[in-house]
Image (cartoon, rainbow, N blue to C red; front, top):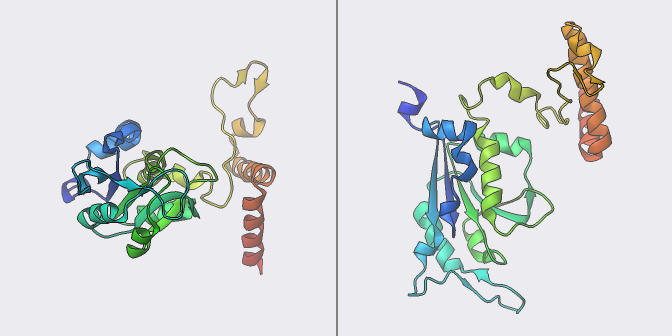
Length: 241
């Protein structure tokens, strides 16, 4: 029996006011093919379906005043109760913990994840606390809603699932896998607009190529991400100790 015949390796349930936004770009390329083959599954849930009044209201004015609206805890709670079937419940918000590759790998090891997409000024904190939602941020910027962030999170996870990426060994050399940014890449033509490929890459000397790639990864990380570089150096020092 194949993996797809046994059922998906990983299932994402997305709670959103705009379920039609999914699968979006995840319906194409590697993720889309894996979705069609049953390597992962996606269930998009319309939060508005759980509204209790004739106007299908999902938000209200914030206590304490202020601009904008807040998503109601009773409506969101009903959506979570009807949809969450185990695994982490993630709420995407700029105030959350910054997502990193280590957490992505952990999520890929789960069998299912539920993702709550906020809108307006966000979700009433009480429902997040009641369900012990994990608050995650993709960076220090603000989006119009959680849906684009959900797509990015799912893309990061799906590509790590077995059978999704053709050459899985390539995943081990990507940015963040070893605490460094990835080294630069080159392909044909060997000469392009007066710019050549580094000689070591066409030398055929695999050990020298490996050493060059490590040195390049270290250098680009040191220059562009001093925070990552500091952690890398600290981890390396700890190993030597």
